[in-house]
Image (cartoon, rainbow, N blue to C red; front, side, top):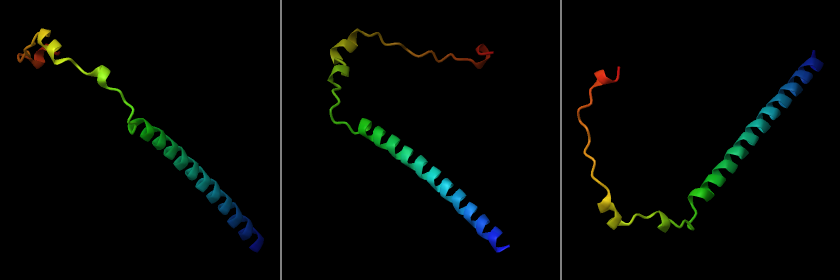
Length: 76
């Protein structure tokens, strides 16, 4: 009886250690992903001047008025 109890507690300890290791590995992967994302978001070297819009070029774009005559019956 005592031998069975020792074996059972030993197997429970092994299962618990495996689960703990599995959770630790998941946490490590999350930390790696977070670190990678942070280096992407925190970069100070972004050159966004090429994406700026020249305000003078906006005058050539026509102003489009919205259509406010939307009817749900047209959808069906």
